[in-house]
Image (cartoon, rainbow, N blue to C red; front, top):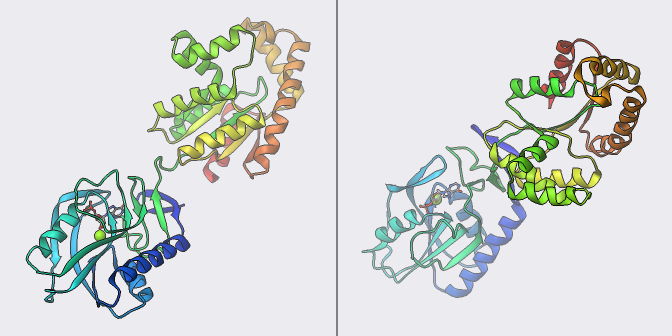
Length: 369
Ligand code: IMP
Ligand code: MG
C-alpha cells in the first residue's frame, strides 16, 4: 500500500503486466502500419512513460512528438481542457497515432480531435494504455486499447494524483475505504470488555459491533436478514456464517465514515475468522489486531460473583456456572488466538488493575498498529 498526499492506494497492475501490454500494443500497431513511418503523438504529462517505453519497443523507424493538455483536478476530470502546448509541426499527409495514458470521460480525446480537425493528416488513430469504459461518454473510436479498468482512480506509470505518483513503475488503485483500524476484541466474562470497548470507540472513532446486539436489533426491527437469522434460531439451529457476515457487512456499510471497527462476539471459529478477513478485504481493509484482555480465573470469579450480588444476572451468581463460562471461553478462543498469532496480530493485554490502567495498556497496543 502507498500513500500520496492524503490518500491510500493499493497495488493494482504490476510492472510486468504493464510492460506486456505496451508490447502487445506495439505489435498490433506495427502490424497495421507496416512500412509507413508514423508520427506518435503523446499527450502530456501522463503519457510520457508510456510513449517512452512504446517507442523503445517499436520495431521500425518512427517519429515522436507531444502535445500538452490539462483537464484533471485532483481525482476528477473536468470539461475545461487547457491546451498548454499544441502541435508544433506540420502533419499533413502523415499517419498519426495518438498515444494516451488513459481515457476516462473522453473530454481530452475530444480536444485532441479538435486539434487535428484541420491538419489534413492521412490517418488519425487512437491508442490508449488504460481505458475506463464505464466513464467514457464520447463516441470517438478507440483503435487500440491496452487494459480496460473499472471506474476507479489510478496512479503510477505516468499517472498522478495532484502531481505525485507519476514516477511509480507499476499501477496503484485508490482504496475504496481509506485507512481503517479494525480490532477483534476478546475477553473472558468479567474481563471488562464492554467498558474498555466504550473508551476505545471514543478515543479512536471506531464503531463497536457486538454481534449479539446486531442480531437483537435486526430481529426486533424485522429486517430481512434479521428474519432470516431468526428462522434458523427458531429451529434451534446455528445461524449460518454467511448470514452473520451479511449482517456485519450491513453494519460496516452503515458506518463508512468510521476510522474502523471493534468486532465483539465474532469471529468464534476459524471459518468465521476467514470470512471476516474476506469481508474486510472486499472493503480494501483488514483486521489489524485481535486484542484479548487477560485476567486470572480467580480474579474473574471474584469479580463476577461481586457483580452477581447487584446485577440480578443468574449466570453471575453461581460459581460453578461462572467457572464453566470461563472454561468455555478459553476453549473457543484458543483456536482464534492461534489464527491471529500466525499473522502476528494477536495481542494479549493484562486486564487486571484500574480501568484507567487497562485503557492505557490498550492504547499502547493500538497506537503501535
Ligand atoms: P478524460 O479527459 O476524462 O478522458 O481523462 C483523460 C486524462 O485525465 C488523462 O490523460 C489523465 O491525465 C487524467 N486521468 C483520467 N483518469 C485518471 C486516473 O485514474 N488517474 C490519473 N489520471 C487520470
Ligand atoms: Mg493524459
